[in-house]
Figure (cartoon, rainbow, N blue to C red):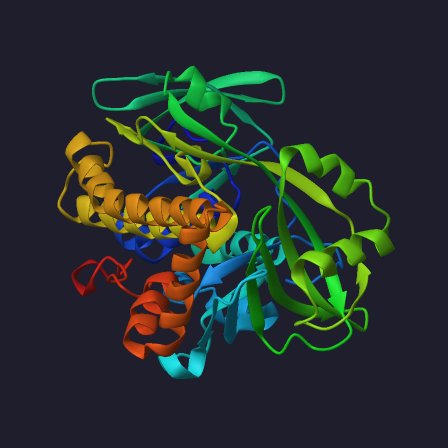
Length: 421
């Protein structure tokens, strides 16, 4: 543990590790010193191996995430165990509304990708443990107990091995998740709206290949999503995200495998085939949360600590990743210009750039969820007509697809430029 860092990232999960990886291409040229403080022990460096597990949780990556991971230098490794989404099938249970998107129509190899969380985490940590990543120190297992703002730098009290040490940093990035206790200790409030729903998640096996199809099925009790996953143990696999009302979640979790599969078919149908196996089930409450402050002088709140949204459109992690890339790009430019990384004007410029993306993405997810959960006959007719019109109008479909893929805005460069090499 050094006494001073340019950047301290609190949280070494997918968001925190992605930020450190995004800064690596420019870190040596700009002499950046970065620390990642993580509550869990860092896995020992080892040969990067994929360890399949039937019940691994997964994340949907928009196609635009590919560019960001290419700039980090991890895409070629990450893609070894990705499942491309080549088709998206959207339907409204009990009604005529249906729409389909196809990668070939949008002239891209995939509309998105599904990656198992443990593989993404392993690839990120492996990148940060490479010999050229010496600018990054992992402080773990450890906890940031307090942050004290200063005139030109931040002071952090870090507890590790029952000892507390103080370090300073130009910038502290809080990427410690939606249940961030540190955010509360810093007096950063947040707006919270419960959807009165839980997401039940599980991996489920159909009797045939998913053929790269992702499904979004709207029902009167909440949406269901089925995502393509790699086969494992000779079984086809899909990731199920099933939204159920709070008062039904205990009953759903109590179902045995056969009854659970039967209930899924009752809500989802047989368009993906006959389900023959299901793994462990887990559930978490669905809420819309937005931090009242995302930047202060010397401080940024990032990822789920800044915003959490309904998984209906699979945009939560993608929004966070775009924020990671935008922050890294802003910090690189500030360093090039000789500005302090914690300068409020620098951080406010980052936030203003991201605010539109956040408002648009969070608002769209919220409106879609409420629209497709409404049983008003006129709204039902309108939404189904909208799905049908989208299906037969290629220009509208392309606009919608590019937004969902994260291709409607320029990607940051994440490098220091030739004059710094």
